[in-house]
Amino acid sequence: MRNDFSCPMRAFLALELYDKNRDLLFKQKKPVRSFLYNWTKVIYGLSYTYANSGAATLKDTDGTDRAYPNLYGVDKPLFRFRADEGDVTYGILVGNGTTAVTLDDYNLASKIAHGTGAGQLHYYETNTRHYTDSDRSYLEVSRRFYNESGGDITVSEVGLGFREIDASGPAFHFLILRDLVDPAVTLDDYNLASKIAHGTGAGQLHYYETNTRHYTDSDRSYLEVSRRFYNESGGDITVSEVGLVFSEQDASNVKYFFLILRDLLDPAVTVANYQTLIVKYIFEFLL
Image (cartoon, rainbow, N blue to C red; front, side, top):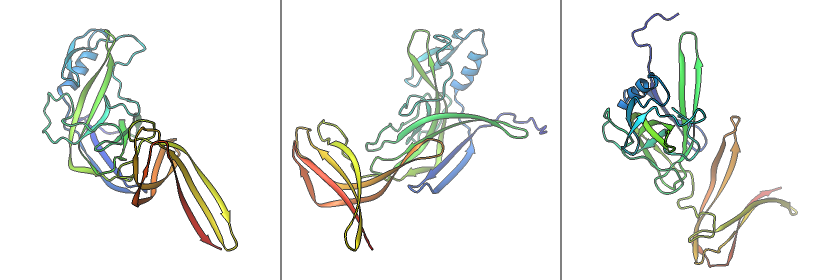
């Protein structure tokens, strides 16, 4: 049994960077030194009388002072980390700001948005896990981020926020940790440089299902992968690149996507309004 009680509670920030083949490129673990004023105020508020005492005043991620705790009801969150996929209001958040950490920080300096556009990352859900070993107890909060923006993205700051549903009805979000990442981590892109979205709006194409077909002739075997695209956007759309992606759902039931082919079209193909484009990859094998 460990009997050194000089530091009974410690926190660490851990980062892991993987390439498109899920090979580990970079790993870092360092002590967290950035508990903010909001953190100690949370502990104070939760240690008070009731879940709606409002004993502490926290600054939310918009910079507004809020009484805490001020619980709406027993079926509402009071100190929730587990943000859903695509939710960038709380849970683990990442940014590219480099402003020094101060105790009264209430948001990241420059938060990276969720999405597939330029400078954006796909935010998966925030998970929590509790486990123990022989003489320690751990609480782990984790989140996965995927870059399909078309360019590299540098992460230089990380934060942790929680959600509370206030007695007045709305959800408020509070940052309790903020750390600068040194060195900053760059996430390479493994997608098309500028993917055309699915839909009927300006600049969009309707994506039909992807089909596969196998066939042979006298001395060759073929695998054909094809997809049809229809333009009903109201204007011409130029297609200048094509790629092929496969999907895997891993043992933890998380779906991953991997780009295995990317080709530039020279010349580019212009798809006029109400025209159809059919794209095929044909793999030929000699018998």
